[in-house]
Image: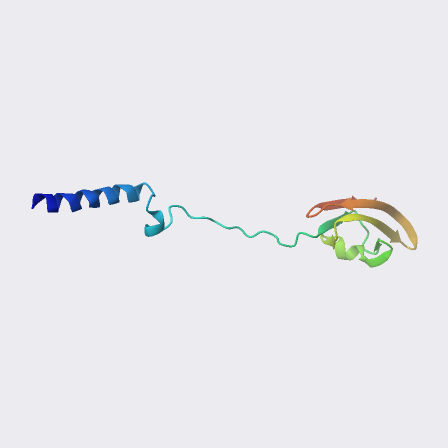
Length: 114
């Protein structure tokens, strides 16, 4: 009779001890939590910023007019595909800056127009 009581009691104590070790974690829930942060999935872009650019300056990217300095004056940035690009800045019909820049994936390149 005592055997019938002791054996299940020992089994119960063993199960409780093992559950504290994480052996039965799949039965009783996760031992730790995983935190997932949002990652920018748009990996095929780089950015160009302009500093000291006049508001009426014309911006050309690879020979195509893309806007004026007013658009990018206050911290605005231009999204571009990664790679080498030719950037040209014109003011009053005169080329002020013309240079080739390499933009890496996810990187930002600041061009100082003086």
